[in-house]
View 1: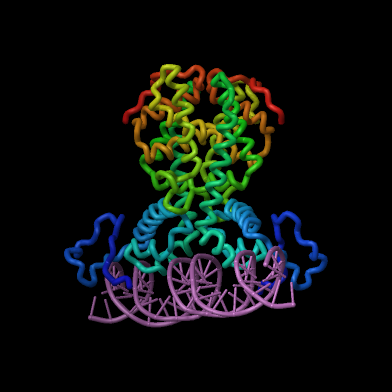
View 2: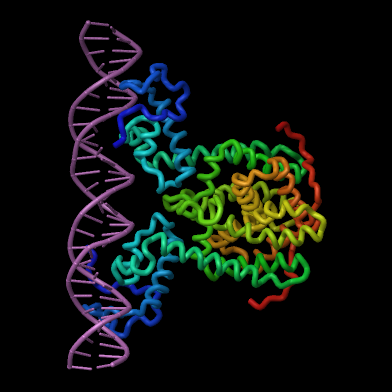
Length: 229
Length: 229
DNA sequence: TGCCATACTTACGTTGCCGTAGGTTACGGA
DNA sequence: TCCGTAACCTACGGCAACGTAAGTATGGCA
């Protein structure tokens, strides 16, 4: 089984010049870096839709149009690849979120953060799906079940500072950080399939809820920050 | 490997009268129902700590002190067992939550619900861990990634009714349902490892956030409902 | 006391996947 | 034009897990 045709190629930039008909020898030869990036892309996609254990190295290699040993050459194994994918996604998300925290007023901060997270979800859906799933390898940092929970801890200090200046117990910031992140994360996950309200509207409502609570809620919340897109 | 000693027995009620020394033939014979329940218990535990794919039928059987075919006899396979476990846990959680919705004032409803969920998390930790993980078999009901998200949809109508009477768009209830459930769920997940504030305190703060929002937050929130425990 | 249903076993066949040993081809520079 | 290095391949070995066929023991009941 599995004929030696040069498969899909999927995410490679230019997909080969000699790929007019599926004859033999239409395989492009990549540099180490190129191949590495391609494998990371494919790995991300597959891990997102099938999970870590549900994805086989064989499949990754096959989708890349190469054979297994190439993957082992680059990442030492499935876990190696997975680790790099996860690391990159966590970085990306955190960069986007922290980079968006530029407002002065705490409500603005909240808005920016919510928007940034939704941006991430929309742009890097696969990455988000991976971060939401549970990690396989005895949990990277602490003892968390999902990477998202792990991320929430990195939001703690931002909240902690705000708490301090407002006279609240800063020891409670972890709790509120988890709550806020959980709120946005699960809503985002739901939004991935529903796609019902527009992103901006979702963000507005989330901020509405987080800021005013159910009690002081506005029927037609508006964002105060100004954003292109 | 694996000597034929009668292993652990783990969750069986009385653990056998002839179990003085690990000689041969100390195995208890159960009725179909007993064995079924025992396997469900063990399955729940293992699925919680290793996930679906990380758990083998062999291990389940071994922990129950029987051999594989017994599991196949009862559930037809790993997926069968998993399905029953999940179904029971979802029922349990929903029963606990809906059963707790007895208050008149919406804030009271919220309190009850939050408390019920935390109760469930505390009492049936394994079940919660399973529900929080992602389902393997192409998603049971809709197209959701986690069972929890699935559960949130079952809270929609409760919120929808409340929204209607308050003049908000009831089409937004799914969004807010996801947000609220996500808030409590991720916090609960975090609380499983942290265990820092007491359950009642966590509930109070969650309600505080959900009700008043970050803006109108109280430094020392109190629950208004009266509960034993 | 002997029977027979039901609980349980041992022992396989099979598949899918991980990881590696060792050989082969392309490509760019001297 | 030759040659070495980096990219890539075929082909296994091995293992862990699923699922099943066919046989064995046990204990309640006539």
